[in-house]
Length: 366
Image 1: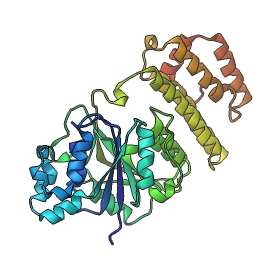
Image 2: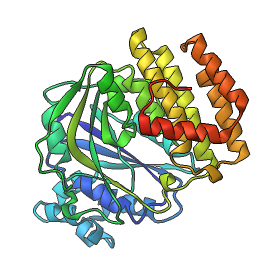
Image 3: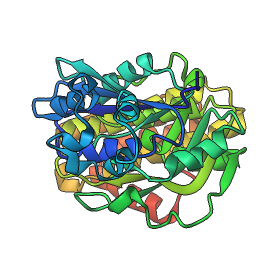
């Protein structure tokens, strides 16, 4: 039996208008390699689960071209028109759906997918995004030669409601260049691209590590930090394989208080990952400086000063105390300076520090 190289895990909730092109971008690459698509429906109330069920219902003997949403699968239809119904049905059964009857969130939904996955590598794909038309052929050529813990690649962000024709990304004419991450500078670059959808993860390397379901936001960044700090073999492919769509109403387009809190809690989780890692002290100090910067960036990059309420500031000060003042990895002098700064208790001062860090890339953080 041919090994399943990839397990695509797609958490979805009310994405009837985007799930089709997401699946189409994967199904149209069926003859590249063997893979499975695990769609975890997080209690959708629209037609999303109905669409998935119609795709996998081969007992009706309807071909994809006969379904009422067939026009949303242009690339898959082009391939299926050249093969027998039996061959088409075999490809469509690669799609599996797991229904959650209460809304558990993306983190818990991804965990359900991990527990069911059997592929060598796991690729987390968002339901309103797509993968590049040549993604699987490019990745297959790399992973058959080596056994990566994590292989990260470039993405292309698109401000559009629909993906480009044939799911071709504009930069995909360049030659894929693989860089092995061997030092702390390379690791910082990887950590700077924390979203899980522009990486594939070795399923055996993931082991028992799971997403934290208490996070409504930044759960993927926390997951990436945990895995990246313990990985032995990471590489970066300077080649766009993922199309990230800015969809109106998506989680990342909304700025509630809970998002602010999750961003800050993520920094505390980064600190825990650093403390428990097997990195040498010199590397930990570099990682700690990055963690300190994230305390400012996560809080202030997406929010204007007037959007941060007094309650949100209280959360920020609590995390600041844990990361900057009580953290034994910092020198006593730095901890004292941070304590003095917090006693001044001037929110605008912290905003000024943020812009200074952003402009000058400070290595000393207060």
